[in-house]
Image 1 (cartoon, chains in turn red, blue):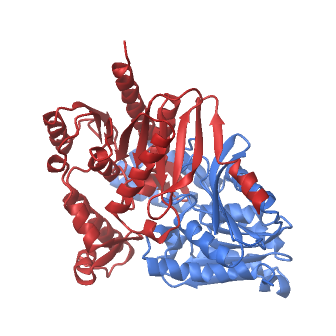
Image 2 (cartoon, chains in turn orange, purple):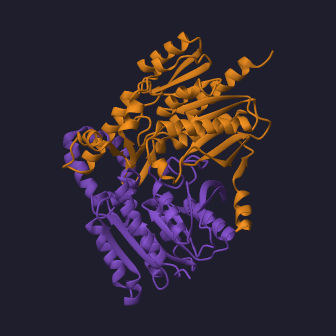
Length: 304
Length: 276
C-alpha cells in the first residue's frame, strides 16, 4: 500500500505554465472535520502576502466552489499563494457551524504562515466573507476581500429557513411554509437543504453583526457588490462606513450582472436535459476584480 | 479509510479527484460519477458518503469534479447528457489512475443523472462488474427537439412567447411536434453488456419526473429488456425508492440520504467477489 500512497501523493500537485500557477492539495487537513486544504500559488517566487479563501457555512457553498477556485487561480497567477477550504466526508461537514468554519480558517492561515507568508489576507463570498471579517482581527489579517458579505447574520439565518421552506413547498404540495422555523423551535434542529442547523448554530449566526462586531480591523479592504444595476447595496455602505471609522482603507466596487439566480443559488438555466451555466462570465469578473485589487494593494505597499 | 486527493490529466483537461481506499488491499474500485448540480464535496455529497461506506466494505472508490466544475480547472458553458465524450475521458482517466495505484482491476460504477450516462458508456469494459444508475435519463431530445431549442431561444421564440395568440396557435403544436424524445443510444446500448455486467436503475418515487422517470421512459426500458435472454434480464433491475428525487440528494434530509446510501451500497458490493 505504500507504493500506492507514493504514486497518488505525486498527483497532489499540478502546474499550469500558461496561467503561471500551481495547485496542490496540502498534506495537512483543516479544522475539526478535516477539510481539505487546497493551495494555489505562482510558479515563480511567491509574494510575501498570501490569501485564505473562506467558504460560507450554508448549502450555497456548493454553488460557490467554482467561483472560489477561479479567485484562487487568478490570485495565484498574480503572484500570491492562496489556500481554499474544502469540506469533505466528515459528519461535521454536514452541519452549519460558524465555530467549525472559524477553526478551519485559523488553521488555513497557520498553513500559509508555515509556508513562509509574512502577511495573510482573508477573502470570502456571502457568509464566507462574513466569517473572514469576523476572524480578521484575531488572525491579524492584513486585508479583506469580501464579495457581497452578509452584514447582518439574523437576516442570513432567517434566509436559511426561508430557503428550506420554499424548497419544501416546491417539492411537496402539503408542506407547511412555516415548517422549518417551527421544527427548529420544537426539535432544536432542522435540515437546511441537506445540512443540519441546530438552534445554537442559528442563534450564533443570528448574533453576527459586522457593523457592531468589528472593533479594531484597520487594514485595507475590498467590498465587492454584485447586482443587476452594478450599484453596491446599502448593507455594503454600512460596512464601508464602519471600516472607515476604524481607520481602514476601503475600496467599494460593484459588478453589474442580470443575476439569473441570486448569488449563491443554483445558477444553471435548464432547457430539458441541457444545463446552461449563467454565471460563467460573472465568476470571472469577480475573480478579476479581487485579483486586480490585491495586485493594486501589493503595488501600493511595495517599498519605493 | 485513507483519502488521496489528486489532480489527474485527461487529454486537454485536468480534474480534481479523491481516491478513497480501505486499510486492506481493496477487492475492487468504484467509480463515483455525480450529476451536474451543486456539490459541497469534491465529486458530490453522495459520492463522498458512498466512499466511506464502500471502504468499510473493502472497496476503494474514486470521485471527481468534471473539468470546469467545482475545483477542476476549465470553463464549461453548457452540460448536455448526450455529449459526454470529454467527461467520459476524464472519468476513465481517474479510474485508471486509481486502479493502477491500488493494483486493482475489477471496477463498478455509481452514476447520478448526467453521471449515469458516463457510467453506461463505460460498462462495456470487460473489467466492469456493473453499474448503479440513479435517476438515469433514458430519453434524449432528438434533432428536431434540438432545433426547436435554437428557435425558442432566438428572436422568433421571443416573439411567440410574447403573444398569447401566437403561443396558442404556434407554440403548443410546435412543442408537440418538435419536443420529440427518443431512447438514448448509450442507454439502450448498455443493455448489450448484460451478458456479463449487472445494471441497476434507481428512481425516487417523490416527483419521479425530476429523476427523468416517465411512462415513456419505462416503455423504452421495457422494449430494451424484451429482447434479452432470461439470464441477461436477471442482471437488470429497476427500483423506485421512497422519497427523492435522487437528483436532489444534496438537499435531502440526512435520514433520507442514509436510506438511499443503504440501497446503493448492497447493490455495489454484490457486484464483486465476496470478502474472504
